[in-house]
Image 1 (cartoon, one colour):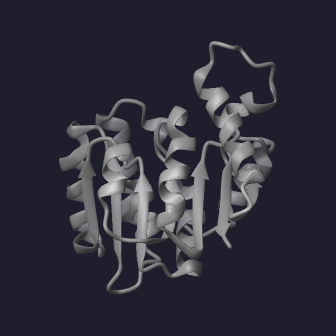
Image 2: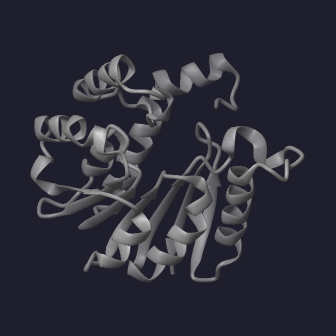
Length: 213
């Protein structure tokens, strides 16, 4: 979803950091071999994720929703040299695809893949996090927040994707639309929870940055 006029959006992308070649290859193969390639973060948002990670310099990152690993590699660019990123996805068919690109990057040994439900895996992770990226099933966004907030270090950052949900957040609500209801509830939670401070950025389909106080 693009909320800027196309020409202005193209100007923004053209004057931002270029996408690394490995990620260009990952994008090409995703479009060739994987269903719903639109789920990729894409070059512009990927550079945003990379920049935020580099500013935070996290020791530990948690990613909910790996897909083909594009955002994983962007976030990994900011890891400390001895840092780790835990990435969780439920799609068993993509595990080998992800690992192939992780191993071709400079961060393969720092990336730990988890297969299964994040609701089950998160409580079993015996660590705290400096940076969390939520980009998974929308109906569980609120549940994910409640699971991770106590494992997020003070000053830690939560990045939440798709929070404008194709613009549906400002349209009349269809009571049967579970995902839009979930995104609306999640955005309200981020605004009102006094443990964090939040700013919503109109980047692509909406990206929220929340900082734990």
